[in-house]
Image (cartoon, rainbow, N blue to C red; front, side, top):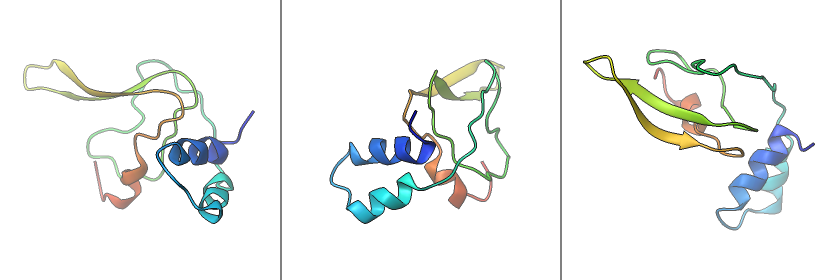
Length: 93
């Protein structure tokens, strides 16, 4: 099984040319793999992000709850995608 870093590096490289040194640096990233139960929020509005998420299997979605209490799904994320690369540079969600 590929490491999380290797998975992320291969995914990023699929968008275009990636220098070998950059690929190696991303592939060398260490990560903690977690099983997240269904209907569990990975990151909530107002949270201070401390990590980046890479979907290894399953499906993840980004949503908000509207004024009427209804959920609006904004995007879906499939295996190998990283929906939160930008979160480390945001003070809070």
